[in-house]
Length: 339
Image (cartoon, rainbow, N blue to C red; front, side, top):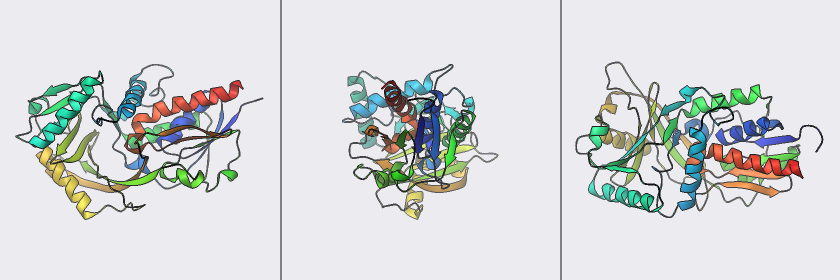
């Protein structure tokens, strides 16, 4: 190639922006095609939690999640957080707890499996000593001290700003890849990826998320991510500067993004069963997004043909895997330039 090679990224969420920024850092002339509507990145909880979300049978997802977490935790010039404000990180530890005996048995399964994989976590039978705001009776759990959480909306805003400083340009969404003109193209538009490349096995999975705002006189916001199993259901509480993000339901309902009464009720019930003090917070927002899920829960990242790459299908791990994805696409771009 002569001159700066051009790259078109279709998708303006955390994955598309991370890929665009990394390519611009490598000297590519980058254009991002994005929709004016908010997507899954706007609704996400922002947990970077490969241990907390681990489950037997998902060894590969755990492996790449841990690789990506290290990229999030790296410091200095060229790191993923370089150019982003430190305030995007909202917590630096996760506490995973169980409400009843069956939930505790599930946690023990995860703890034992992680130990077998060479990634031990710290089990506890005194969870309230770690987080006093937990409900009485919650004792069993484990801590994941290396996990983080980020403010998803602040990350997207900061990535957008950093892209602009690097010279990335913006364009509207596209419905056909033949309308995208560049040396290389990256399909990174989440649940819409199959519309651009039929055959990508990605389906939308709905997830409802709540935002609870701290009010004067309420108990303080927890300092770590709290994940819980509540009678077989999963709930997470993620700190923000002004409150807590509570999520998330998960079910397949097409492309419906309307929060339902039953979904919101279950989240509130479970959140308050884990941390009763949240009942005094303000219910500030109810939203739903569409996770781009694959059959094996692994993202689809790599080359589709000589001019097209894909970075999609990240499911519930979009924010966690954003740095890993950006590095893998960057490696493909370097290989292309070397040809």
